[in-house]
Image (tube, rainbow, N blue to C red; front, side, top):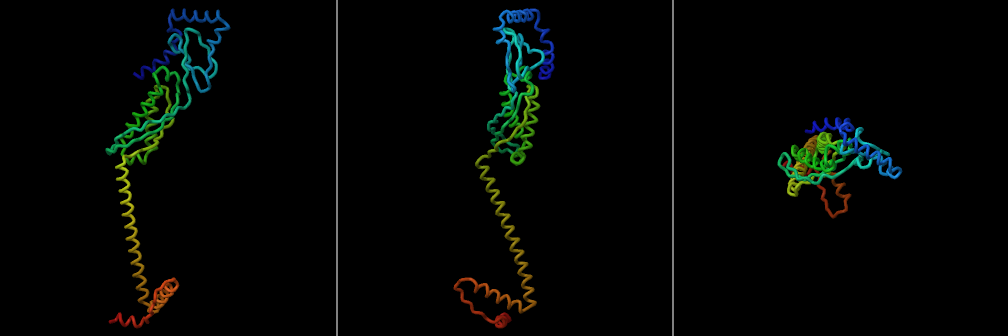
Length: 275
């Protein structure tokens, strides 16, 4: 059905003048005669102005004139037989309302976005669809649901750019017959259920605690290895133990505390250790 419309539009535009028939030509000639008789008053009804960002689609006896859209600037129409529609060619933006989507892994999320599009072909936007703006908005909502329904929650949270690009390609292909060019699609926000947020927070906290325990255990293991190596070095040199003892006393004495220290000779301690 769409292919038939695409092929029929150019033919209709090329053969507009020949398809109006004898009665149509009579009406056109009568309109021209009426314009000439009422000059210069009729000139204000015949000359129209289109702004730089607009295009005008002229209908003569209900048919689009050959040549397509007119503008920007001045153009001429015939009273009584001609009418025209202005089409805005500027980029239009709209927000996609939050959509409740069931992901591939059976998680319900609320996702919204924004779409940027513009009219690329004013003739198709007028002739092929009733309301291009409303149709694009509805199609964007449906496309968002369809694309997110094939993704897991992790993919939705991490691959926003890929999802936006996929939506843009799908929308651009679907709206091509309407003369619409979808320039950009962005995913604004992904809202998760409150219970799921709590579960994910608890999982993340448990993961951090497990990682902290592993790091602490590795630190204890490294410290025990260092102490073992230090004990072997001290065992080889008895004077090293005496120096370590004096260094410990110096460290304790440097602090302002009420600790009372009774130094004992190392030899006496060794005799007790032998017993």
